[in-house]
Length: 387
Image (cartoon, helix red, strand yellow):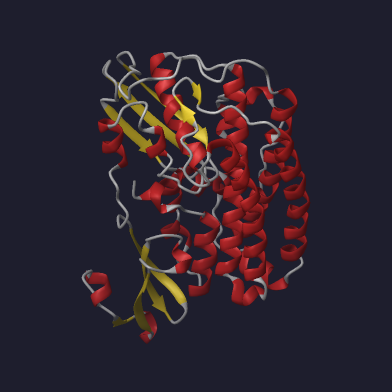
């Protein structure tokens, strides 16, 4: 083992107890990607954590400076590849802010619809994999996983009909969206939403009456309100700790101010509270999607004509930062434009990267089995961490 901490495999701890340095990852199913946690243990208790990232680094910010405004949205989707629609939106919104580019109302509504469908799909994958992580104790974690993947497939079917892709879409473009809705698509969306709405009730009945699930999540991995604000986490994590903060409310974008929805907040700050926030977000996203479909305006889907070359879209000199509310929290893009067809500088704020910094604060004193439950409740995607 190359690291000094890992070389000291066994040393004497306080009170004569043995201390063991154990690697969790970088290849580990519960790590949700290539994440390495060097855990220092006394028996089954975690007394030290050294988080190691960087195994998946892909130079996204440099790619953003070498690819044009037309090309990069499809690359932005590869940061948070579980919620690609939202990652694309953060980038094009930043370009539009710097270039003072207007977006037609229909395109804004379609962006909201895509973002909320993506939130539903992302939460389905999160819930399923999280229960699978804890599945041995739950006595049915694999069942929940298969149910959630079943519902996620329904949303991916909608995305495939809209864009031709199921994971990385290239739907958003500077000035609007690339595709309008095909015939019959909105009715399919309504039917899928109705189905998922009923299935969320089923998930809750399965889990919240399960004593093992409650023991594994309640009082585990508690993040206090003060710690959440000091570390700078966002999304379901900070709302699970009693902080009523959502970018869609704090700084509405893409016509979110037109829609009526609640921001779910829980105060316990534990794994169960984060679970409850996301379960409520399922229903709020469904509510927003239905409002979009009811009020979808007519008109163009882009404020500019189609391009004939990838360098055709240029942005005047300037700089700006935009942020959107992704499934894992705040996604931000900071762009410096020099008047050319591509940014001079791009800086990306990934929600998973910021949220992951909470782990060393809350893993100390927990059991090894709790590490799996806590990390799953954080819901990191490592394309967004090692960007």
